[in-house]
Image 1: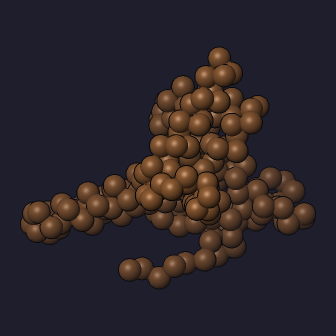
Image 2 (image 1 turned 90 degrees about the vertical axis):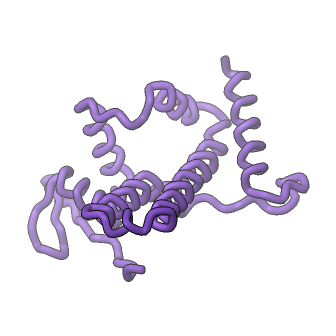
Length: 183
């Protein structure tokens, strides 16, 4: 497994220019998007105040991709996200998203592993490693904002449910109930 790199530090100057501290040059949002697609974590901080601006810039990158027609997020998901900011359901949404992306990441990893196991020639196919790395980078980028904030519920909250899937279904049902009350 590859060695874990520290996040690439990008500093934002008062002029709003973004400075890559590793290469000592200015970068654009597209450059930052490229770093993330390659699997690199980034941290963007305001030079003067020291405030972490990473979330703000990642959302801006997503917004730019969506505005160019590179739609990853369906309209109903975006609508539900906006609603979650104005309701009490907001506390459930980050947990639900984190669990969903974790399941997606696990499913993708298992699929890639199965492809190697079922057909060993697939692993030797030109571009297979690049495809695998691209999927891993995509999933890492999509889940990076969520993976650190989710913690499993304690035993009392699970009502005796023994597995994660049961807990996720319970949380989803609760979220659906809260959303239906809003309608």
